[in-house]
Length: 164
Image (cartoon, rainbow, N blue to C red):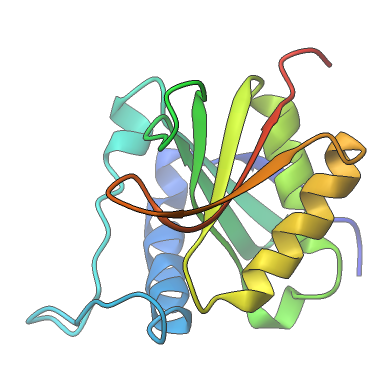
């Protein structure tokens, strides 16, 4: 497998991104309490990723095929932070092949500042993934919180990559 290509999503990527979001939400159905709508979809509002300049959507491609995505916005839980990894997903076929790590690192390099990455309770695989990726990216310079309040419920890793 060749190295993944990580790039900002274009409007032409909207349909594949929407479909990957459905797979992502299904994968998390054991920890994310949501139901299908009348069309049999979970649904996810993507428009802000093209209309709001503080929001960014990224897609991951392997050999020209969609392999995952990352969505970034500014809906942080802790006021000292700037960026929130709103959603992050790698198709099962590409997991444990470096696609997620490459995607995360490319997004962090593209969006500089004070980050928050959160994982919901029960999503132990995501906690392990993000600890490993963030530790490697920051050289261990991050702080982890365990929140259980109106701001966030779950693990939250925070780091600052404002300086390259």
